[in-house]
Image (cartoon, rainbow, N blue to C red; front, side, top):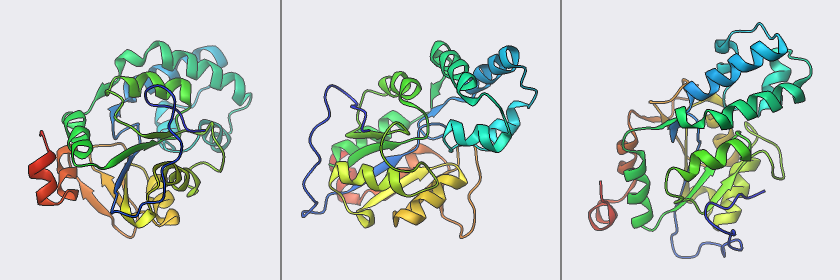
Length: 230
């Protein structure tokens, strides 16, 4: 399912024939620091469901869909745990903070005529209020609610590119976890690792940037001069 960033989603774009580019981004650890929200939600799970696993065990699997994480952790009654986790995440969403420079960087890409999209393993009820804070500069948002397999499968990235009408070679995916890197590799999409995020890249070592503003190096100098406000 493609979640509309603002209003109803447009029909899928026509295949790119004029050099259109796409910047796809993960949400947690790339666009916003949601660790405080996740920590509070996990504490609530521990209180209500008697789960004794520490937050660091949950955090180790970030990037995967929640049900996948629960299976890997051996948590039973995963649906009830999910409901508790999601309800607490929504109520504490105000604890998340956007990373310094991310909004200005996104607007620079929009001004340079790049198509933006989000590919996240966070479910729509939790993703929507967070992304709304960034000014809705996204042409597509792919969550686990839609068709296809979840990360690290290539499906969500490829479906996002179908939405945008952009070829994999003309896109970049910015993530912060190993599953992001694997998903991009399997989709044939160049990957950039967000060094400000929560995880470490795997081999082969990808291009890594240490701040959102460093993503501007992806813009040709002409686009940066004409379109950037950063």
